[in-house]
Picture 1 (cartoon, rainbow, N blue to C red):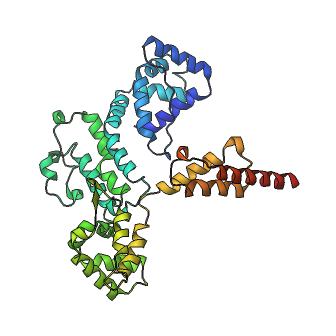
Picture 2 (cartoon, helix red, strand yellow):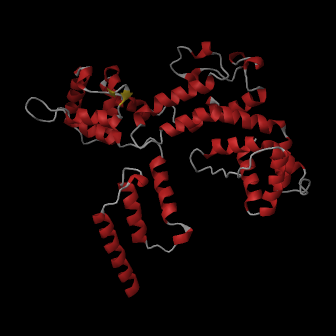
Picture 3 (cartoon, rainbow, N blue to C red):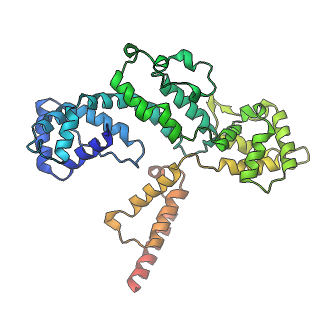
Length: 360
């Protein structure tokens, strides 16, 4: 069931018609449903799906009645397509299942949209997500002790819960297997990626669990100029380091990965020289690897807000300057306290820009 198409069809049906919105409001009043706007699902926008599902479930009775009585309900087109989907009992089952399962996926999504390096945690969190999804329909006894959940034959009927044990129902379970099950994860997630598996070494608490082999593979790929023998000596020294030499938790909370490795890179010997120079070079490169496209998407989002319809004629240099200010300002914009000197500089810049523009 293509629920994405349903969301888009419903949104555009009401978007440019105040008459339709007023008529729909009457159905909401009759069913005592709070008036809320129809949300637009944007496939390229983060985290929009759960909000759209919640809103559609809230308005589901009114939407069902509205489209069932629509005059175009029997004509080929968008309205008939929506009417048919609202008539299908699987539609609500699907929406309820999405409302149930999406928070698990959203938590995973949000974890890798934070503005700090998380690339070393990608494989463990993917495994954790896969386990949380599979336990919904696979008996726990088959998952316990498994080192690779992809080896579990989840598609065999004997390896699934019986129908009565699946709280979401058979239709929802089938949908989960086809669209959100481990088979789809294997295609969409980089399971088995050798680089990501080697990057688990960024977890400093597990440094003694690894041999030198993954370090060498990462160095060959990302820092081929690093001396292999010196790197091996550094890695062995790193493994011999006491756990207390690096603070990994503060006030019960795990420190950021880049902060932990920053402390390691700042360590010096009794002679005052850097203790781990090759390790510092390699791990600086590894910590800079992106774990998602969140940063680039943030930049595009900023650009869309800067180059809006209301100011579509901004010069490229002005847009670049706006973008640089936003990217280089670490705090939230509403927390900025403009000093008199800052305001004076801004005023001078505006006056200068206006003069240049008027001379052209």
